[in-house]
Image (cartoon, rainbow, N blue to C red; front, side, top):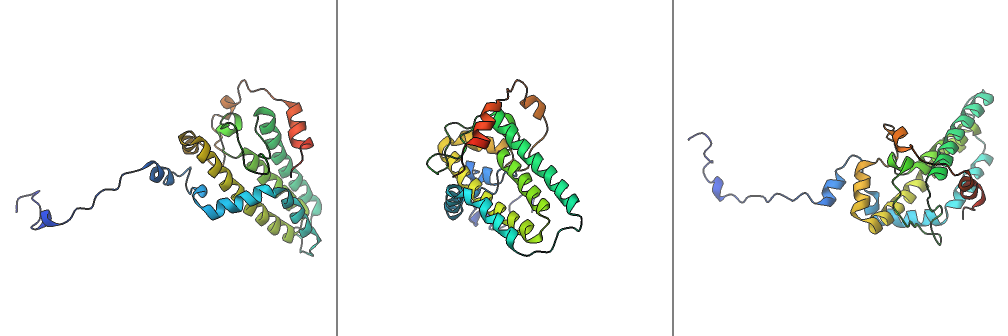
Length: 222
């Protein structure tokens, strides 16, 4: 048989049609965007409920402090200092983000809402900088509590609530901003910040301390 000739009967075999790489499939395979949580209706509905009642997360976690628990460490001063440091890092991230970029905190009518797609400042390096700050805050509280029950239970509550809220927010943003948001998701990671070039992103950015006081300390979380 000549080299390169098809095997006998090969021409009679049905050929499988190559599936086109649609926008959805390409995005789903993206290491930055995948897995696309907003494609899961049940998770989105759960996230909407979490967003509406997110103010209950902290009281629910505080209740764990009343449950008898073994300590994380015999050195309560050390755990307190480490916890305070982590909490300060988290709150600093939140303050920096609120002071530099205007965002509608709290949604509208207890629902996820956004007028514009914010991609500047810290949002150029991570899609959820406020939740990165929350993660440090939660870790700080967990360590400072020096209690295994609060540390494990509080972190589980925080993760469960934030996963749902992120899914609901991604669903809303993808529905409203379409390709613009999909492209943003391709470029920017969801949770783990990309630190390269952050100084350039912050060049010329002004800080509004009054906005921080108003949004972070005066505005109720309902």
